[in-house]
Image 1 (cartoon, one colour):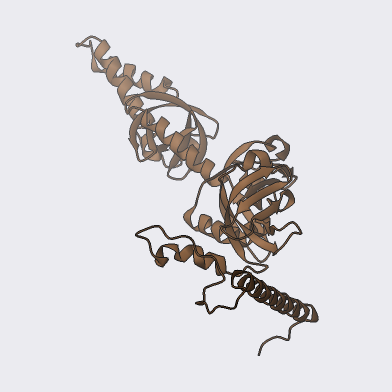
Image 2 (cartoon, rainbow, N blue to C red):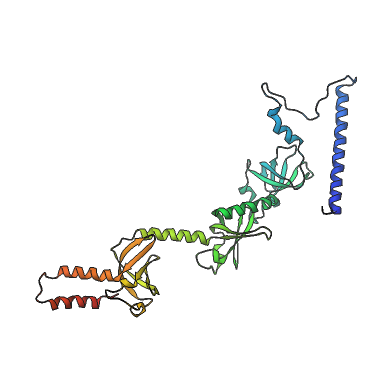
Length: 357
């Protein structure tokens, strides 16, 4: 069942009908007056259209002017979304060519919801965009439009598509609040939570005011007029790419020194600098088997190890290989013949005993 129309809606419909009837009556009177002036003696003449038709160029037919004729007959109503081209712009607003009998005018306050919008730097003659009709006549013969309203109606669909496509958006933060920052996207006010401004939670958001950022849409709630953005995911991707570039420059066989940062049952993760961590597996700590890794290593302990493998962004370390490497180098430096085997055994044992993990 159709909803009952309000008194205001009925009054508006009556007003439109009255205006249409008056316009039709005026048109008929104009046609009669024009006919009388052109044919004062009442001669019989063939019927012609009251709408002017463009003069045909030899070789062209009516079909060539179909779009122009359709535009001349179309009706424009409040709420329609029209596309036009900017033909003039100043501090008060823009004037647009709508391919209609009357131009469109958009006041500066109806151009954008962004409080920092600068019409003279953001709009130039020849630009094309859409506006919603808010009045068919502004009192000066122009159709009054609102780009802000059109953006609000059309932008939400664009934002949903941006979220699906994970589109990267570049912009400048125009406002900060305690809980985050504000960035306008497609004329819509977007919120970046403090936890999404950087890789770590941002305590002082003031430092981000007027700062350029790269973000993605992570939340769109059109009904609530909420747009949520995030820079964190892009920063994480950037950090991973940079880390992988650094790791790719590491060479297996090189000796590195680092700090034990995390201990697991299967091994320890060692920070070897430049934001890179390597895994020192429990089997690679000593030549003899280590049953309890925490009995030989502690978090914060300095260790020296050999890079044994670099693969798919992961670095493998070995203290055991370093011990074997040093032992081999020492053995090559000592005389080939020993006075007794006990001396050689003692020399190697001293080496392993004094080696610093």
